[in-house]
Image (cartoon, rainbow, N blue to C red):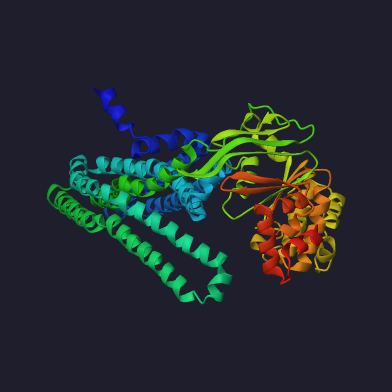
Length: 605
Protein backbone atom coordinates (compact mmCIF):
# COMPACT_ATOMS: atom_id res chain seq x y z
CA UNK A 1 0.00 0.00 0.00
CA UNK A 2 2.70 2.42 1.01
CA UNK A 3 4.81 1.53 -2.03
CA UNK A 4 1.91 2.09 -4.42
CA UNK A 5 1.18 5.49 -2.91
CA UNK A 6 4.86 6.40 -3.12
CA UNK A 7 4.98 5.28 -6.75
CA UNK A 8 1.91 7.34 -7.64
CA UNK A 9 3.43 10.34 -5.88
CA UNK A 10 6.41 10.26 -8.25
CA UNK A 11 4.53 8.98 -11.31
CA UNK A 12 4.51 12.36 -13.07
CA UNK A 13 8.16 13.15 -13.93
CA UNK A 14 7.34 16.85 -13.95
CA UNK A 15 5.19 16.85 -10.84
CA UNK A 16 6.40 18.73 -7.77
CA UNK A 17 7.63 15.66 -5.81
CA UNK A 18 9.55 14.25 -8.79
CA UNK A 19 11.11 17.62 -9.62
CA UNK A 20 12.22 18.19 -6.02
CA UNK A 21 13.69 14.67 -5.78
CA UNK A 22 15.52 15.13 -9.06
CA UNK A 23 16.96 18.48 -8.00
CA UNK A 24 18.17 17.01 -4.73
CA UNK A 25 19.72 13.88 -6.29
CA UNK A 26 21.18 15.39 -9.47
CA UNK A 27 22.26 18.86 -8.40
CA UNK A 28 22.00 18.92 -4.63
CA UNK A 29 24.26 15.89 -4.13
CA UNK A 30 26.90 17.42 -6.41
CA UNK A 31 27.26 20.23 -3.87
CA UNK A 32 26.60 18.29 -0.66
CA UNK A 33 29.87 19.31 0.99
CA UNK A 34 29.11 23.00 0.57
CA UNK A 35 25.52 22.46 1.62
CA UNK A 36 26.80 20.67 4.75
CA UNK A 37 28.94 23.72 5.58
CA UNK A 38 25.96 25.99 4.98
CA UNK A 39 23.74 23.78 7.13
CA UNK A 40 26.28 23.84 9.97
CA UNK A 41 26.54 27.64 9.81
CA UNK A 42 22.76 27.95 9.88
CA UNK A 43 22.74 25.61 12.87
CA UNK A 44 25.14 27.93 14.69
CA UNK A 45 22.97 30.95 13.88
CA UNK A 46 19.82 29.10 15.00
CA UNK A 47 21.52 28.07 18.25
CA UNK A 48 22.55 31.67 18.92
CA UNK A 49 18.96 32.84 18.29
CA UNK A 50 17.49 30.25 20.65
CA UNK A 51 20.09 30.89 23.36
CA UNK A 52 19.53 34.66 23.15
CA UNK A 53 15.81 34.07 23.88
CA UNK A 54 16.80 31.98 26.91
CA UNK A 55 19.23 34.70 28.08
CA UNK A 56 16.44 37.27 28.17
CA UNK A 57 14.82 35.35 31.00
CA UNK A 58 18.11 35.16 32.88
CA UNK A 59 18.67 38.91 32.43
CA UNK A 60 15.22 39.70 33.83
CA UNK A 61 15.72 37.45 36.83
CA UNK A 62 19.21 38.84 37.51
CA UNK A 63 17.91 42.41 37.35
CA UNK A 64 14.51 42.22 39.05
CA UNK A 65 14.64 39.12 41.22
CA UNK A 66 18.25 38.61 42.33
CA UNK A 67 19.40 42.21 41.66
CA UNK A 68 22.87 40.90 40.71
CA UNK A 69 24.62 43.65 38.71
CA UNK A 70 27.89 41.73 38.03
CA UNK A 71 25.78 38.86 36.73
CA UNK A 72 23.95 41.25 34.40
CA UNK A 73 27.31 42.52 33.05
CA UNK A 74 28.44 38.97 32.40
CA UNK A 75 25.22 38.14 30.60
CA UNK A 76 25.56 41.36 28.56
CA UNK A 77 29.04 40.37 27.42
CA UNK A 78 27.74 36.89 26.54
CA UNK A 79 24.94 38.49 24.51
CA UNK A 80 27.47 40.50 22.48
CA UNK A 81 29.44 37.34 21.77
CA UNK A 82 26.28 35.48 20.76
CA UNK A 83 25.20 38.16 18.28
CA UNK A 84 28.73 38.45 16.85
CA UNK A 85 28.88 34.67 16.28
CA UNK A 86 25.40 34.75 14.76
CA UNK A 87 26.41 37.58 12.40
CA UNK A 88 29.60 35.81 11.28
CA UNK A 89 27.81 32.51 10.71
CA UNK A 90 24.99 34.21 8.79
CA UNK A 91 27.51 36.00 6.60
CA UNK A 92 29.39 32.76 5.91
CA UNK A 93 26.14 30.96 5.12
CA UNK A 94 25.06 33.63 2.62
CA UNK A 95 28.42 33.42 0.83
CA UNK A 96 28.36 29.61 0.63
CA UNK A 97 24.77 29.53 -0.65
CA UNK A 98 25.52 32.25 -3.20
CA UNK A 99 28.46 30.27 -4.58
CA UNK A 100 26.37 27.11 -4.79
CA UNK A 101 23.56 29.02 -6.47
CA UNK A 102 25.88 30.62 -9.02
CA UNK A 103 27.43 27.26 -9.78
CA UNK A 104 24.05 25.57 -10.32
CA UNK A 105 22.85 28.41 -12.56
CA UNK A 106 26.04 28.18 -14.64
CA UNK A 107 25.77 24.38 -14.93
CA UNK A 108 22.15 24.52 -16.06
CA UNK A 109 22.87 27.28 -18.56
CA UNK A 110 25.65 25.14 -20.04
CA UNK A 111 23.31 22.15 -20.20
CA UNK A 112 20.65 24.15 -22.03
CA UNK A 113 23.12 25.60 -24.52
CA UNK A 114 24.75 22.22 -25.11
CA UNK A 115 21.29 20.71 -25.70
CA UNK A 116 20.40 23.43 -28.20
CA UNK A 117 23.64 22.90 -30.11
CA UNK A 118 22.59 19.26 -30.59
CA UNK A 119 19.20 20.14 -32.00
CA UNK A 120 18.40 20.22 -35.70
CA UNK A 121 17.74 23.32 -37.78
CA UNK A 122 14.08 22.28 -37.96
CA UNK A 123 13.79 22.17 -34.17
CA UNK A 124 15.37 25.62 -33.79
CA UNK A 125 13.41 27.33 -36.58
CA UNK A 126 10.09 25.96 -35.31
CA UNK A 127 10.47 28.10 -32.18
CA UNK A 128 11.31 31.69 -31.42
CA UNK A 129 14.77 32.30 -30.04
CA UNK A 130 13.25 34.22 -27.11
CA UNK A 131 11.76 30.94 -25.86
CA UNK A 132 15.21 29.42 -25.47
CA UNK A 133 16.53 32.55 -23.78
CA UNK A 134 13.61 32.50 -21.33
CA UNK A 135 14.11 28.80 -20.57
CA UNK A 136 17.84 29.30 -20.02
CA UNK A 137 17.47 32.28 -17.70
CA UNK A 138 14.24 31.49 -15.83
CA UNK A 139 14.78 27.73 -15.59
CA UNK A 140 18.39 27.86 -14.46
CA UNK A 141 17.62 30.46 -11.79
CA UNK A 142 14.54 28.58 -10.59
CA UNK A 143 16.56 25.38 -10.01
CA UNK A 144 19.04 27.11 -7.72
CA UNK A 145 16.23 29.03 -5.99
CA UNK A 146 14.38 25.80 -5.11
CA UNK A 147 17.49 24.13 -3.72
CA UNK A 148 18.43 27.20 -1.68
CA UNK A 149 14.87 27.41 -0.45
CA UNK A 150 14.94 23.80 0.72
CA UNK A 151 18.31 24.02 2.48
CA UNK A 152 17.36 27.35 4.08
CA UNK A 153 14.05 25.94 5.27
CA UNK A 154 15.76 22.86 6.70
CA UNK A 155 18.71 24.75 8.16
CA UNK A 156 17.76 28.26 9.16
CA UNK A 157 14.01 27.99 9.71
CA UNK A 158 13.61 24.44 10.99
CA UNK A 159 16.65 24.52 13.27
CA UNK A 160 15.64 27.94 14.61
CA UNK A 161 12.14 26.65 15.26
CA UNK A 162 13.48 23.56 17.03
CA UNK A 163 15.83 25.61 19.21
CA UNK A 164 13.22 28.20 20.12
CA UNK A 165 10.61 25.51 20.76
CA UNK A 166 13.07 23.86 23.13
CA UNK A 167 13.37 27.13 25.05
CA UNK A 168 9.57 27.43 25.16
CA UNK A 169 9.22 23.85 26.44
CA UNK A 170 11.84 24.47 29.13
CA UNK A 171 10.02 27.56 30.33
CA UNK A 172 6.44 26.25 30.00
CA UNK A 173 5.69 22.82 28.43
CA UNK A 174 1.91 23.21 28.47
CA UNK A 175 1.89 26.63 26.86
CA UNK A 176 4.41 25.61 24.20
CA UNK A 177 2.06 22.89 22.95
CA UNK A 178 -0.93 25.21 22.97
CA UNK A 179 0.99 27.79 20.95
CA UNK A 180 0.85 25.59 17.84
CA UNK A 181 -2.95 25.53 17.62
CA UNK A 182 -2.65 27.93 14.65
CA UNK A 183 -0.83 25.39 12.46
CA UNK A 184 -3.78 23.27 11.14
CA UNK A 185 -5.94 26.18 9.87
CA UNK A 186 -2.85 27.82 8.33
CA UNK A 187 -1.94 24.64 6.42
CA UNK A 188 -5.53 24.31 5.19
CA UNK A 189 -5.46 27.83 3.73
CA UNK A 190 -2.08 27.28 2.04
CA UNK A 191 -3.15 24.00 0.47
CA UNK A 192 -5.98 25.67 -1.44
CA UNK A 193 -3.63 28.17 -3.06
CA UNK A 194 -1.10 25.72 -4.57
CA UNK A 195 -3.15 24.82 -7.67
CA UNK A 196 -3.75 28.48 -8.42
CA UNK A 197 0.00 29.10 -8.27
CA UNK A 198 0.63 26.65 -11.16
CA UNK A 199 -1.59 28.40 -13.70
CA UNK A 200 -0.40 31.87 -12.72
CA UNK A 201 3.27 30.85 -13.00
CA UNK A 202 2.64 29.37 -16.47
CA UNK A 203 0.85 32.49 -17.71
CA UNK A 204 3.54 34.78 -16.32
CA UNK A 205 6.31 32.76 -18.01
CA UNK A 206 4.46 32.75 -21.35
CA UNK A 207 3.87 36.48 -21.16
CA UNK A 208 7.51 37.11 -20.27
CA UNK A 209 8.66 35.11 -23.28
CA UNK A 210 6.29 37.05 -25.56
CA UNK A 211 7.55 40.35 -24.15
CA UNK A 212 11.14 39.29 -24.83
CA UNK A 213 10.14 38.20 -28.34
CA UNK A 214 8.51 41.55 -29.15
CA UNK A 215 11.49 43.52 -27.86
CA UNK A 216 14.04 41.30 -29.61
CA UNK A 217 12.29 41.51 -32.98
CA UNK A 218 11.88 45.28 -32.72
CA UNK A 219 15.57 45.80 -31.95
CA UNK A 220 16.79 43.39 -34.62
CA UNK A 221 14.45 44.89 -37.19
CA UNK A 222 15.02 48.49 -36.15
CA UNK A 223 15.78 49.58 -39.74
CA UNK A 224 12.38 48.33 -40.92
CA UNK A 225 10.69 49.77 -37.85
CA UNK A 226 12.05 53.21 -38.59
CA UNK A 227 11.73 52.99 -42.38
CA UNK A 228 8.03 52.09 -42.13
CA UNK A 229 7.40 54.30 -39.07
CA UNK A 230 6.30 51.28 -37.04
CA UNK A 231 7.31 52.75 -33.70
CA UNK A 232 3.70 53.09 -32.52
CA UNK A 233 2.76 49.60 -33.72
CA UNK A 234 5.79 48.04 -32.00
CA UNK A 235 5.06 49.94 -28.81
CA UNK A 236 1.44 48.75 -28.85
CA UNK A 237 2.62 45.21 -29.47
CA UNK A 238 4.99 45.39 -26.51
CA UNK A 239 2.35 47.12 -24.38
CA UNK A 240 0.01 44.15 -24.80
CA UNK A 241 2.61 41.68 -23.56
CA UNK A 242 3.80 43.99 -20.77
CA UNK A 243 0.20 44.47 -19.63
CA UNK A 244 -0.29 40.70 -19.60
CA UNK A 245 2.89 40.14 -17.58
CA UNK A 246 1.95 42.96 -15.21
CA UNK A 247 -1.50 41.43 -14.71
CA UNK A 248 -0.14 37.94 -14.01
CA UNK A 249 2.51 39.36 -11.69
CA UNK A 250 -0.19 41.18 -9.76
CA UNK A 251 -2.21 37.97 -9.58
CA UNK A 252 0.88 36.10 -8.36
CA UNK A 253 1.49 38.74 -5.69
CA UNK A 254 -2.14 38.56 -4.63
CA UNK A 255 -2.20 34.75 -4.47
CA UNK A 256 1.15 34.26 -2.74
CA UNK A 257 0.40 36.95 -0.15
CA UNK A 258 -3.24 36.01 0.41
CA UNK A 259 -2.16 34.03 3.45
CA UNK A 260 -0.61 37.03 5.18
CA UNK A 261 -3.73 38.46 6.90
CA UNK A 262 -4.86 34.97 7.93
CA UNK A 263 -1.42 34.05 9.28
CA UNK A 264 -1.02 37.36 11.11
CA UNK A 265 -4.47 37.06 12.68
CA UNK A 266 -3.81 33.49 13.81
CA UNK A 267 -0.39 34.56 15.09
CA UNK A 268 -1.98 37.42 17.01
CA UNK A 269 -4.41 35.02 18.64
CA UNK A 270 -1.56 32.72 19.66
CA UNK A 271 0.52 35.62 21.04
CA UNK A 272 -2.44 37.01 22.99
CA UNK A 273 -3.16 33.60 24.46
CA UNK A 274 0.50 33.15 25.41
CA UNK A 275 0.68 36.60 27.04
CA UNK A 276 -2.51 36.10 29.05
CA UNK A 277 -1.54 32.62 30.21
CA UNK A 278 2.06 33.61 31.06
CA UNK A 279 0.82 36.67 32.95
CA UNK A 280 -1.58 34.47 34.86
CA UNK A 281 1.27 32.16 35.87
CA UNK A 282 3.47 35.02 37.10
CA UNK A 283 0.69 36.79 39.02
CA UNK A 284 -1.37 33.89 40.28
CA UNK A 285 1.09 30.98 40.64
CA UNK A 286 4.28 32.83 41.54
CA UNK A 287 6.33 31.95 38.45
CA UNK A 288 9.42 34.11 37.93
CA UNK A 289 9.11 37.00 35.45
CA UNK A 290 12.21 35.71 33.66
CA UNK A 291 10.29 32.60 32.56
CA UNK A 292 7.51 34.84 31.23
CA UNK A 293 9.83 37.07 29.21
CA UNK A 294 11.94 34.18 27.99
CA UNK A 295 8.87 32.29 26.76
CA UNK A 296 7.38 35.33 25.02
CA UNK A 297 10.74 36.19 23.38
CA UNK A 298 11.15 32.62 22.12
CA UNK A 299 7.58 32.56 20.86
CA UNK A 300 7.90 35.84 18.99
CA UNK A 301 11.24 34.82 17.49
CA UNK A 302 9.76 31.47 16.43
CA UNK A 303 6.86 33.12 14.63
CA UNK A 304 8.79 34.17 11.48
CA UNK A 305 10.54 30.83 10.79
CA UNK A 306 7.25 29.03 11.50
CA UNK A 307 5.48 31.27 9.02
CA UNK A 308 8.17 30.69 6.36
CA UNK A 309 7.96 26.91 6.86
CA UNK A 310 4.18 27.06 6.53
CA UNK A 311 4.56 28.94 3.22
CA UNK A 312 7.34 26.68 1.94
CA UNK A 313 5.08 24.52 -0.22
CA UNK A 314 3.52 27.62 -1.76
CA UNK A 315 6.87 29.24 -2.51
CA UNK A 316 8.25 25.98 -3.92
CA UNK A 317 5.41 25.60 -6.39
CA UNK A 318 5.84 29.15 -7.65
CA UNK A 319 9.45 28.29 -8.59
CA UNK A 320 8.97 24.69 -9.71
CA UNK A 321 7.33 25.77 -12.97
CA UNK A 322 10.68 27.26 -14.00
CA UNK A 323 12.39 23.97 -13.09
CA UNK A 324 9.81 22.10 -15.17
CA UNK A 325 10.44 24.10 -18.36
CA UNK A 326 14.18 23.68 -17.81
CA UNK A 327 14.02 19.89 -17.50
CA UNK A 328 11.52 19.57 -20.37
CA UNK A 329 14.10 21.08 -22.69
CA UNK A 330 17.08 19.19 -21.28
CA UNK A 331 15.24 15.84 -21.25
CA UNK A 332 14.02 16.00 -24.84
CA UNK A 333 15.59 13.53 -27.25
CA UNK A 334 18.21 15.44 -29.30
CA UNK A 335 17.02 15.92 -32.85
CA UNK A 336 20.63 16.06 -34.02
CA UNK A 337 22.58 13.77 -31.69
CA UNK A 338 26.35 13.46 -31.72
CA UNK A 339 27.20 10.50 -33.97
CA UNK A 340 30.44 9.35 -32.41
CA UNK A 341 29.69 5.75 -33.38
CA UNK A 342 29.55 6.47 -37.10
CA UNK A 343 32.68 6.41 -39.25
CA UNK A 344 34.12 9.70 -40.53
CA UNK A 345 33.68 10.81 -44.13
CA UNK A 346 36.83 10.00 -46.11
CA UNK A 347 37.25 12.02 -49.29
CA UNK A 348 39.29 11.10 -52.31
CA UNK A 349 37.81 13.13 -55.18
CA UNK A 350 34.78 14.83 -53.52
CA UNK A 351 32.26 13.57 -56.10
CA UNK A 352 28.68 14.43 -55.06
CA UNK A 353 25.69 12.44 -56.21
CA UNK A 354 21.98 12.89 -55.51
CA UNK A 355 20.11 9.67 -56.26
CA UNK A 356 16.28 9.96 -56.40
CA UNK A 357 16.19 12.21 -53.33
CA UNK A 358 12.79 13.11 -51.89
CA UNK A 359 12.16 15.70 -49.21
CA UNK A 360 9.37 17.86 -47.75
CA UNK A 361 9.45 20.45 -44.97
CA UNK A 362 5.75 19.84 -44.31
CA UNK A 363 3.60 16.77 -45.03
CA UNK A 364 1.99 16.70 -48.47
CA UNK A 365 4.14 19.64 -49.67
CA UNK A 366 7.11 17.96 -51.39
CA UNK A 367 10.10 20.16 -52.15
CA UNK A 368 12.13 17.44 -53.89
CA UNK A 369 10.68 14.76 -56.14
CA UNK A 370 13.23 12.06 -56.97
CA UNK A 371 15.97 14.61 -57.64
CA UNK A 372 19.05 13.07 -59.25
CA UNK A 373 22.28 14.67 -60.46
CA UNK A 374 26.05 14.43 -60.14
CA UNK A 375 28.45 17.23 -59.21
CA UNK A 376 31.81 16.30 -60.68
CA UNK A 377 34.89 16.56 -58.47
CA UNK A 378 36.87 19.77 -58.76
CA UNK A 379 34.18 21.35 -60.98
CA UNK A 380 31.60 24.09 -60.50
CA UNK A 381 27.98 22.93 -60.65
CA UNK A 382 25.36 25.67 -60.67
CA UNK A 383 21.71 25.35 -59.65
CA UNK A 384 19.27 27.78 -61.24
CA UNK A 385 15.53 27.99 -61.52
CA UNK A 386 12.47 29.69 -60.02
CA UNK A 387 12.16 30.37 -56.30
CA UNK A 388 10.80 27.50 -54.27
CA UNK A 389 12.13 24.87 -56.66
CA UNK A 390 14.44 23.28 -54.08
CA UNK A 391 17.84 24.78 -54.92
CA UNK A 392 18.77 25.95 -51.44
CA UNK A 393 17.32 22.75 -50.02
CA UNK A 394 20.00 20.84 -51.96
CA UNK A 395 22.67 22.64 -49.94
CA UNK A 396 20.75 22.19 -46.67
CA UNK A 397 20.52 18.45 -47.28
CA UNK A 398 24.19 18.23 -48.16
CA UNK A 399 25.05 19.87 -44.85
CA UNK A 400 22.56 17.55 -43.15
CA UNK A 401 20.58 20.42 -41.74
CA UNK A 402 17.68 18.15 -42.69
CA UNK A 403 17.50 14.44 -43.54
CA UNK A 404 16.22 13.22 -46.95
CA UNK A 405 12.98 11.28 -46.74
CA UNK A 406 13.84 9.07 -49.66
CA UNK A 407 16.74 8.28 -51.98
CA UNK A 408 20.35 8.86 -51.02
CA UNK A 409 23.07 11.51 -51.13
CA UNK A 410 26.55 10.14 -51.83
CA UNK A 411 29.99 11.71 -51.57
CA UNK A 412 32.67 9.53 -53.13
CA UNK A 413 30.21 6.67 -52.89
CA UNK A 414 29.58 7.13 -49.15
CA UNK A 415 26.02 7.79 -48.02
CA UNK A 416 26.19 10.94 -45.93
CA UNK A 417 23.66 9.45 -43.48
CA UNK A 418 26.14 6.66 -42.72
CA UNK A 419 28.96 9.01 -41.68
CA UNK A 420 29.17 11.43 -38.75
CA UNK A 421 27.77 14.90 -39.27
CA UNK A 422 30.86 16.62 -37.92
CA UNK A 423 33.21 14.84 -40.30
CA UNK A 424 30.88 15.77 -43.17
CA UNK A 425 30.63 19.43 -42.23
CA UNK A 426 34.37 19.72 -41.67
CA UNK A 427 34.82 18.93 -45.38
CA UNK A 428 32.44 21.69 -46.53
CA UNK A 429 32.90 25.44 -46.80
CA UNK A 430 29.65 27.39 -46.88
CA UNK A 431 28.82 30.97 -47.87
CA UNK A 432 25.19 32.08 -47.88
CA UNK A 433 23.28 35.12 -49.02
CA UNK A 434 22.44 36.22 -45.48
CA UNK A 435 25.88 36.28 -43.93
CA UNK A 436 25.96 35.83 -40.19
CA UNK A 437 28.91 37.34 -38.36
CA UNK A 438 29.34 36.76 -34.66
CA UNK A 439 29.87 39.49 -32.12
CA UNK A 440 33.58 40.21 -31.91
CA UNK A 441 36.37 41.41 -34.18
CA UNK A 442 36.94 40.83 -37.88
CA UNK A 443 39.91 38.63 -36.93
CA UNK A 444 37.68 36.49 -34.71
CA UNK A 445 35.10 36.00 -37.43
CA UNK A 446 37.64 34.91 -40.04
CA UNK A 447 39.30 32.56 -37.53
CA UNK A 448 35.96 30.82 -36.91
CA UNK A 449 36.63 29.03 -40.18
CA UNK A 450 39.59 27.29 -38.54
CA UNK A 451 39.85 27.74 -34.80
CA UNK A 452 43.37 28.48 -33.65
CA UNK A 453 44.50 29.62 -37.11
CA UNK A 454 47.74 31.63 -37.02
CA UNK A 455 47.78 35.32 -37.89
CA UNK A 456 49.48 34.76 -41.24
CA UNK A 457 46.69 32.36 -42.31
CA UNK A 458 44.05 34.93 -41.35
CA UNK A 459 45.80 37.63 -43.35
CA UNK A 460 46.26 35.34 -46.35
CA UNK A 461 42.56 34.39 -46.35
CA UNK A 462 41.51 38.05 -46.07
CA UNK A 463 43.77 39.04 -48.96
CA UNK A 464 42.47 36.20 -51.14
CA UNK A 465 38.91 37.30 -50.35
CA UNK A 466 39.69 40.95 -51.27
CA UNK A 467 38.97 41.94 -47.67
CA UNK A 468 42.43 42.99 -46.49
CA UNK A 469 42.35 46.50 -48.00
CA UNK A 470 39.04 47.59 -46.51
CA UNK A 471 39.94 45.97 -43.17
CA UNK A 472 43.18 47.95 -42.98
CA UNK A 473 41.29 51.15 -43.77
CA UNK A 474 39.61 50.88 -40.36
CA UNK A 475 41.51 52.53 -37.47
CA UNK A 476 41.59 49.26 -35.54
CA UNK A 477 42.24 47.02 -38.54
CA UNK A 478 41.49 43.38 -37.83
CA UNK A 479 40.49 44.25 -34.26
CA UNK A 480 37.50 46.24 -35.57
CA UNK A 481 34.28 45.09 -33.94
CA UNK A 482 31.66 43.95 -36.47
CA UNK A 483 28.64 44.66 -34.25
CA UNK A 484 25.57 42.49 -33.82
CA UNK A 485 25.11 40.29 -36.92
CA UNK A 486 27.97 42.24 -38.52
CA UNK A 487 25.81 45.32 -39.08
CA UNK A 488 28.80 47.64 -38.61
CA UNK A 489 29.97 46.45 -42.05
CA UNK A 490 28.42 46.83 -45.49
CA UNK A 491 26.84 43.88 -47.29
CA UNK A 492 29.84 43.42 -49.60
CA UNK A 493 32.26 43.62 -46.68
CA UNK A 494 30.31 40.99 -44.75
CA UNK A 495 30.29 38.71 -47.79
CA UNK A 496 34.05 38.99 -48.20
CA UNK A 497 34.60 38.25 -44.50
CA UNK A 498 32.40 35.17 -44.96
CA UNK A 499 34.44 34.10 -47.99
CA UNK A 500 37.66 34.59 -46.02
CA UNK A 501 36.14 32.42 -43.29
CA UNK A 502 35.43 29.71 -45.88
CA UNK A 503 38.88 30.10 -47.46
CA UNK A 504 40.75 29.61 -44.21
CA UNK A 505 38.78 26.40 -43.65
CA UNK A 506 40.37 25.01 -46.85
CA UNK A 507 37.52 22.53 -47.37
CA UNK A 508 37.40 20.33 -50.51
CA UNK A 509 33.67 21.05 -51.04
CA UNK A 510 32.25 24.57 -51.39
CA UNK A 511 28.58 25.53 -51.18
CA UNK A 512 27.55 29.03 -52.30
CA UNK A 513 23.95 30.11 -51.79
CA UNK A 514 23.08 33.35 -53.58
CA UNK A 515 26.29 34.86 -52.28
CA UNK A 516 26.08 37.98 -54.50
CA UNK A 517 22.31 38.46 -54.83
CA UNK A 518 22.07 41.59 -52.67
CA UNK A 519 25.27 43.35 -53.72
CA UNK A 520 25.91 46.34 -55.93
CA UNK A 521 27.92 45.91 -59.13
CA UNK A 522 31.28 46.94 -57.66
CA UNK A 523 30.90 44.76 -54.56
CA UNK A 524 29.62 41.91 -56.72
CA UNK A 525 32.69 42.08 -58.93
CA UNK A 526 35.03 41.91 -55.94
CA UNK A 527 33.04 39.10 -54.30
CA UNK A 528 32.91 37.17 -57.58
CA UNK A 529 36.67 37.39 -57.88
CA UNK A 530 37.06 36.22 -54.28
CA UNK A 531 34.66 33.33 -54.90
CA UNK A 532 36.65 32.37 -57.97
CA UNK A 533 39.71 31.89 -55.78
CA UNK A 534 37.64 30.01 -53.23
CA UNK A 535 36.34 27.53 -55.81
CA UNK A 536 39.63 26.72 -57.53
CA UNK A 537 40.20 22.97 -57.54
CA UNK A 538 37.22 22.32 -55.26
CA UNK A 539 33.90 20.60 -55.88
CA UNK A 540 31.52 23.54 -55.84
CA UNK A 541 27.75 23.84 -55.82
CA UNK A 542 26.42 27.32 -56.56
CA UNK A 543 22.82 28.47 -56.16
CA UNK A 544 22.16 31.59 -58.21
CA UNK A 545 19.32 33.66 -59.59
CA UNK A 546 21.58 35.95 -61.62
CA UNK A 547 22.55 33.78 -64.57
CA UNK A 548 25.41 36.13 -65.43
CA UNK A 549 27.22 34.92 -62.30
CA UNK A 550 27.23 31.25 -63.34
CA UNK A 551 27.65 31.44 -67.13
CA UNK A 552 31.11 29.90 -66.89
CA UNK A 553 30.11 27.04 -64.59
CA UNK A 554 31.23 23.59 -65.69
CA UNK A 555 27.65 22.38 -65.46
CA UNK A 556 24.33 24.15 -64.98
CA UNK A 557 21.30 22.34 -63.53
CA UNK A 558 17.85 23.85 -64.02
CA UNK A 559 15.75 22.92 -60.99
CA UNK A 560 11.96 23.18 -61.06
CA UNK A 561 9.36 21.70 -58.71
CA UNK A 562 11.98 19.64 -56.89
CA UNK A 563 13.54 17.98 -59.93
CA UNK A 564 16.32 18.65 -62.46
CA UNK A 565 14.59 19.46 -65.76
CA UNK A 566 17.69 20.50 -67.77
CA UNK A 567 21.44 20.24 -67.46
CA UNK A 568 24.47 21.26 -69.48
CA UNK A 569 26.85 24.14 -70.07
CA UNK A 570 25.65 27.65 -70.69
CA UNK A 571 26.03 27.47 -74.49
CA UNK A 572 24.38 24.06 -74.74
CA UNK A 573 21.36 25.14 -72.76
CA UNK A 574 20.92 28.28 -74.82
CA UNK A 575 20.98 26.21 -78.01
CA UNK A 576 18.33 23.87 -76.62
CA UNK A 577 15.95 26.80 -76.25
CA UNK A 578 14.35 25.29 -73.15
CA UNK A 579 13.73 26.57 -69.65
CA UNK A 580 17.25 27.92 -69.15
CA UNK A 581 17.10 29.89 -72.41
CA UNK A 582 13.75 31.28 -71.32
CA UNK A 583 15.19 32.41 -67.95
CA UNK A 584 18.17 33.91 -69.71
CA UNK A 585 16.04 35.93 -72.15
CA UNK A 586 13.81 37.19 -69.33
CA UNK A 587 16.81 38.39 -67.31
CA UNK A 588 18.36 40.13 -70.32
CA UNK A 589 15.05 41.80 -71.05
CA UNK A 590 14.90 43.12 -67.48
CA UNK A 591 18.51 44.29 -67.51
CA UNK A 592 18.76 45.98 -70.92
CA UNK A 593 16.62 46.66 -73.98
CA UNK A 594 18.76 45.09 -76.77
CA UNK A 595 16.81 43.65 -79.66
CA UNK A 596 17.47 39.99 -80.20
CA UNK A 597 17.73 37.84 -77.05
CA UNK A 598 19.25 34.95 -79.04
CA UNK A 599 21.93 37.16 -80.54
CA UNK A 600 22.67 38.59 -77.14
CA UNK A 601 22.88 35.10 -75.72
CA UNK A 602 25.27 34.10 -78.44
CA UNK A 603 27.41 37.17 -77.86
CA UNK A 604 27.49 36.52 -74.18
CA UNK A 605 28.38 32.93 -74.77
